Amino acid sequence: MKISETKAEGLLREYSILITAAEIDEQVSAKLTELAATVNMPGFRPGKVPMSVVKSRFGPQVQGEALKNALDEGARQAIEDNELRLASQPSVDIKAYDEGKDLEAALSCEIMPEISMPDLAALKIEKPMLEAGKAEVDEALNNIADANRPTIEVTSKRAAKDGDVVVIDFVGRIDGEAFEGGAAEGHSLELGSASFIPGFEEGLVGAKSGETRDVTVNFPEDYQATHLAGKPAVFEVTVKELREKGEVAIDDELAARLGFDDLGALRDAVAGQINGQHATALRQALKKNVLDALADGEAFDIPPSLYASEYENVARAMNPNAPEPHNHDHDHDHDHDHDHDHDHDHDEDHVHPAADDGMDDDAKSEAKAVAERRVRLGLLLTEVGRVNNVEVTEDDTRQAVFEEARRYPGQEQQVLEYFQTNKEAMQQLAGPIFEDKTVDFILEMATVTEVQTDVETLYAAPEEAAAPAKKKAAKKSAAKKAAKTADKADKATAKTAAPKKAAAKKTAAKKTAAKKAAKK
Image (cartoon, rainbow, N blue to C red; front, side, top):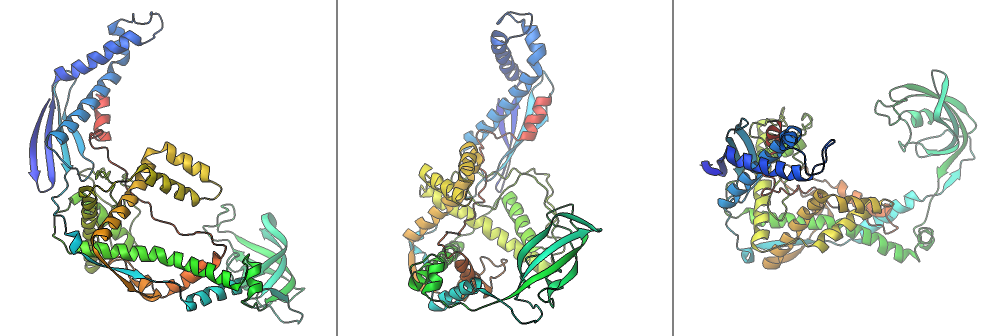
């Protein structure tokens, strides 16, 4: 086997791989001999099958496997001999091969740039702090009280209005025929809640208790029941009772109804839920401050394929008119695993979908800046972790699996089994863990100053220049989420879209190359 470097431009490296016919024949012969000694074929005793028969039966398959193994070994040798640290999945393309002739192939890859380590001790990082205040807790309690307001029967003959609850019997028909699931008795419906088919609740505004009326609606085109989607329907509705919301006091009685000892315990639980919501946002803000501090360091080249792929992701997220992406098995958000191999699996001649079609020049420039920042900081964070021996342990991934399982109540066992049998999924969990542990390491080394923040600032700060700011409404969101989870259930979730770990040294030859070889 002969390996020669043919290109070294920036971060791009290319190597020619020459595997002689003799080397290939040696592998093929060895495998065929092994098969001849063990294969069972009708009409022959075990181990007595003539080589000509074995070759006729298994020759093409063995030939393909030999070529793939040779290509994998050539790529591995090229990577190890040249001490390459890969930034993305390499590709191997067969340039020339005929049976009985030498195999010529080309290895293309992008390497990691040289990255100067920042002085972590010199970094100054602000750590935002925020605890639930009285106003937030009061807002959440008001939301809880509103959700638990009793309804009182309306004894007057007034017409129903938005906010009222009507108790109804109804039968739905399409083309005069009743359909399955289109009828109910004694159904309580809050008008204006948008919980029924569009137009249904509006059709009952103005109805009185005891009244029967027809309500005409159109099922949405994307309705979950496909046999009803897009079809017009007429519902015969009888209002059996009209009820309006009463008042509810925020007191010990309300707390007891919700399963708490008293109002104080309820307030503590609500505050805890809000603080849990804040904790996630605070961690993201702190992480952003870490990345901002790192961003001021020395610049370095970034692998073009990583940048191109990340630009596509950013542009697609920014562009509401972006075409649907083609599946090229990229599966990345540009997180990095702790071994620094990246399964981006790019073809050099791959043409990305025009994710930025329709974007103006300013928007494209913004997307480019964000993509470059993400790739650069991702690589830098990876390098900091590598140099400082940050590791993801089995206990780390095991805990992450358990946390993931908790997100699916009633399906925990299936989730656990999925991760136990799916190595790739386990590797995906390792990426964000490694990143978080690296951030924590940086925080241990840096000078960290705690600073108080407020809800508006915390939730309005964009992650990056291109990220839409979460406006003041985020405050209500946190309070409402806390109100809805007064049972103390943990609703926080973490992003786990880590990349697949590229086994560069083991599977350096691309699948396309292996297929080509197998067909020979």
